[in-house]
Length: 274
Image (cartoon, rainbow, N blue to C red; front, top):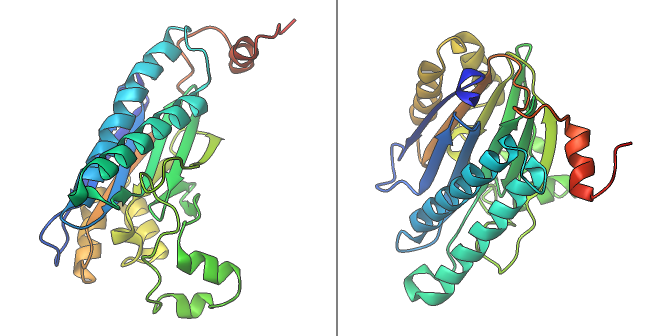
């Protein structure tokens, strides 16, 4: 069971200003999954979109990880994540089309799936995934936001980015269009790595250096660490909902199947490894 190899702690908070929390988080250490969604839309539709995203994707991954463990899966973990995201996007889009109060609703998404000493990272929008390795915090995702586009095109400098009114305008989200392309990647996951999944309510208000300082100081107690990160955002204004997930790799976690990764990939492609 992944619970023996991955420790996960998570907190979501409305913040200090907003009445409702449109973030949604769900984790399952048994299968090594952590999912975060930051909803958007009027009439609390963002809350609906984010909840639909986390529940649909988690349900899909619970089924597909069981198949992976039993060696009956027809595709690798990254494909499993992609298919779950596609299903969630279509469900949110259809719900928005079918009910006027949900029109235009959508959500960001950031998730991790740990399997076979690797981690699949998936994200859409401006929710983020970081990795702390050997005490160094590294951002692993690039925001789908108007501000990020302006920085990359040279229209605004990093020094001025903090004062920009465009920082919360996302250019891609789950459920806004009939189809969506998520950012997906796979990395090696090593013991003592800590992955941070967060909504922009954290990183907009707490500098990366301070995030790293808190995690490094409290990494022996993940529940305390996530609470301190949320409190740091609230102490700095807390004008947005803030959600934080920390997932720590405790030790190597090879797949239950004796078949190696490349053997399973060859099987999926219908090829012979010999």
